[in-house]
Length: 121
Length: 108
Image (cartoon, rainbow over all chains, first blue to last red):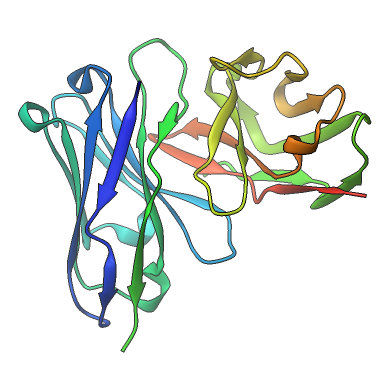
């Protein structure tokens, strides 16, 4: 059974930093791109970033470029999101999701339960 | 950036009825890059359809996807009580994913 479990969310002041983690199990982690997607309270879904299987390619939505860094550790089956210079508008539930597997189809096949990040003074 | 516009914003129907949800793209999208998700309150999104028309594992056959180019449709043939939720379409392009704003399917 595929499982994705996020952790690391919490309350942080504007300008602060937070590191999210996602522990993956039930599939060959190193065979998939992985993504972070967020959802502000009462709002829709916004893709944040993704990373290639070997970590050699990373892409970000414009609003987080230069502030967020996605990374992975295939030996630990883990995905990370380092978030710096946090703003109130970064407040959201952050989901880890299993991404592309070189099949030719692009979709987010499995999602974690999410971790809430609140940016407030 | 490709913008996805979903309609209607809210759809009010009764169990047993047919639901038709629309997703229109601002420019042509490859069918291989178009997916649909269902999200219930307090839960993570769940993949329903990928490749515009392929059902994900475990998805009932009352869910179907169709369309090409800029116009895509999610159809639920006969609504069950558990189908009332928010539905999102998603596309991939220019090394990023974008989502539609969602359609809320509510019980009439």
